[in-house]
Length: 458
Ligand code: MG
Image 1 (spheres, rainbow, N blue to C red):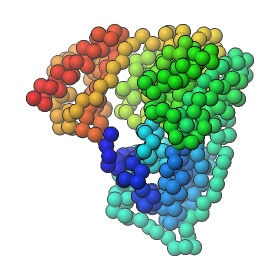
Image 2: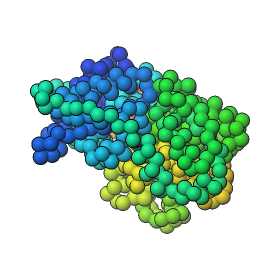
Image 3: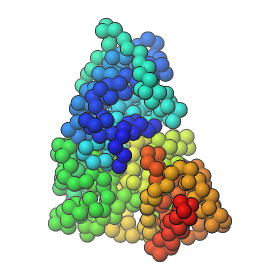
């Protein structure tokens, strides 16, 4: 992982004390606030911004520092405390704030933290506006105000309640409650435990909480992948539970473990959630180009279509809003339902999956078997951006019969599956993802690209 401070369209991420300090956070707050004052004039009234944080020990320091920066350019701050990333998006819109800030490094290890920015619609700024914020930060182009005009800070502890109410409204709460599911929830000591347990209890579940205290001392590596969730798998078996859920520290991603303690994984989350939504309504879905074909199959069964977007939550969210999609998200366990908010939301994922289990009257393993019959493989290959273009050109020559989408790197669609090659935004590597119905065919696509990379790099 890169050691330098990374600034992308959704914010910044770095290692606390090395390149991400309180001083950096304050200047980033000044830059974001200056940008908002220039772009969201409200008849001279001062603007406000929600600030929330995940449970990392550095969170309070960085959140206070960002707030200080915002106040020093005249922005009022609503301090939400320890809350989830989707929670900040919801409160930004609920309180009609000009923007939101989440202090989180998402699924990255404990030494990292980050500052994520949201506009008034709850979505990360589009690239052009993100560029303006970055420029203001790098050139220290801040419009500081005097002590009288300084922004004020207030506290708001309503995030969980507002969030839960919105999630309960998208499912049939009473019928889920009748099923009396036993659920194990692993929140990796992040921000999602408290609100996650409360939501599940509202849905009538018997909840076995694992790592649900928001201490920020992550009990295992925080990314909700198979190798990090062996403890959850064991606990589901021990508790004889119907399902296990795992959140990442800011609770926008959700992975699922079945009743037999088998890690189903994150790719299934969106497909299963979509299956429930499509059982109750029709409309379009949106997913990024690296997301499994399971979503296409589920949509097709309902006579619906899927819009594919570039990788990145904001791209999916914008496509959903533009096309009025009823469901969307990313294959990393990120489910978006616009009725709750345009942000990936593990609470939405949990409620929709429990809704599906209730409605179908089937176990989660049976439902997963129904939607899943694919083998996906992801690899990361060292290759700089100039060479990646060459790799893509040669891959096109190799697969002349494929349908090619160049929205984000290159995605090749074949009769038996697909292959996506895309450069990383933050490191000199390319990601190669393939999916077909057999492990062998998937491996073949990956190996073909691996061979082309070797040729290109000499
Ligand atoms: Mg996250």
